[in-house]
Amino acid sequence: MAVDIGGQNKRGETVGADRAGLNELVTSPCQAASVQNIPKPWPAPLHDPAAVQRALAEQVQHTVAIARALAGSGRPVDLAGLDQAMGLLCAKALDLPPDQGRLARPALAVVLAELDLLGTMLRAKAPA
Image (cartoon, rainbow, N blue to C red; front, top):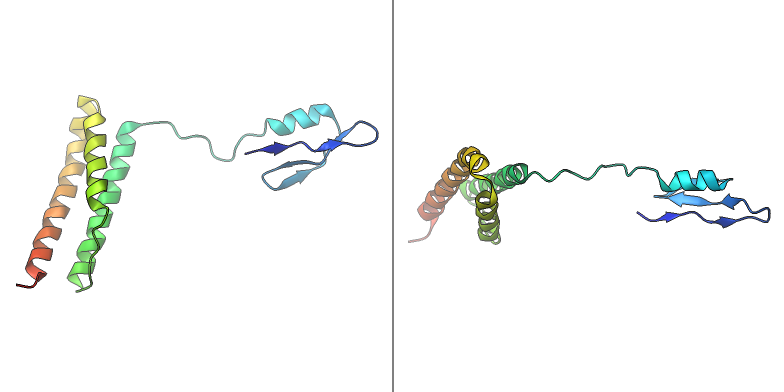
């Protein structure tokens, strides 16, 4: 986020600071410096490859569950992009250290089971 400290008035005082839509009257250089140090509202997330892989597995599982629900109700199912999501999921699982990779197996097994059920359902509904 950009910080606009504004300018100076005729007396040399800094005025008109603005940050993320918050207008504040800044009357001294010390206050202007403190406006620049306002923390962002959300801290940057820590990079945890296992958490990323788990979240991606959940997303794919939910996508497949929605596709199964649509297929079960007779609606058309668009699986475009599912192959890319699965490829990314597998790549993220392979990137994990061995100990974390072993912990990821159950989530991957659930995704595989969901995909198998979807495949069976789509084959059964396919016109002959």
